[in-house]
Image (cartoon, rainbow, N blue to C red):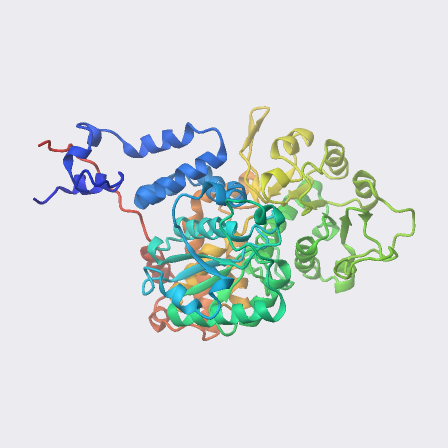
Length: 572
């Protein structure tokens, strides 16, 4: 007997059992179709007070009814992204061996060496697959080596591709390379789901990666690959090793950018050789610097940036921000002098004994006094206009620190960029309170808006999620042979000019997430045009379309979840 669409639609929302046929009317309460099941699911989600429990609930909903899951996600982006991605995905990764429910992605183990192609070929949607996020779990967010527990970072990233750029869910492939772990906690955990061995190094690692990359190209000929949360050394190493052989990119790493001399006009900003994160932070800082300079009446050339945290991430972002100053006509040496770095021992100076090599770039040669170790003392010495945190030191920006910044600046720029929230240097509520609402703020993890004296304040989030969905969509549609630096550059150009008039008037440094699909479409357009300019594209049809028509086509290609209006069910 043929069943009505309402029954077929509802049946997707409920688990199948042996007791009833999947489409049996008897499985549904008599008046189920008269209720709003979407609202029911939202109430169930919101009834949970613990973020990890919300993550587990949404994970289950996606397994039962992916259309309903993505429909709810698209309608509640600001609420759900912090659960599916940073910060909650970090907690999900740490605990993944204990909360695992069902197979969700593809594991390729070091023990599969020699037969990786066969493992990849077991994926059910080989011919339809268009994008994979691949992690080895060695550096998940700021949480370190999580081994095989890293799979949720790939799943979460792909959920953002789906929600943010309309990538079809069945065309995504979350992959975790299970290469062992150097984290003794997991080796000793009886429930750990990964290989219990130290991570491979040198030739063994290279041979595995070479086999994996060739196998994934053979099995998935149309696949775009994004590397995610590899250890810093391997992230750079394997991106450089494969980026011109395969369709691969990494939105977390890159080399220092350069800006065009027209940086005051955001539509003309040119950011060179960035792989994602740096472009987002730089774009936010450009907008923040404009707001700060407008409030103080001081020229943009007066900007000074103090970095708290001088690991590879901190130094990498600092190098990317050099272009802000060289654009003003400063020499590289003068630009470097506008950036100060601080580590656990204090202000980094060139005369410090045993200074690590990567810290020498910004080490000060113009300070000869006693070692400055207190952050407030350092601020009073440097007199920065902007304070960036990449230290993973929770609450490092104390009230004294923030008020020291406020004493120097009408509108201080403070970007606590460490992920997840429990590692953030400064919570947004404290930043607003301690600056009387004058702070220009962006964080690595999301925070809720704050009301103060009847005025609403919205935080920015310097997250690469603004960039990578559009890069992926543009690369897929143009069928580019590989991802060039200039394609990422053009994505950053699009982001930097993305604030609408209302967002500028509100003083935001990043656009609101509710516009993510529009942002992704415009970024995809910029990526496609750059691929065409470099003759990297293989979809020649897109070359025939003017920008307006191409933008409409991009929107048309975005996947939408199927939603049906439920009708009353006939009873037997």
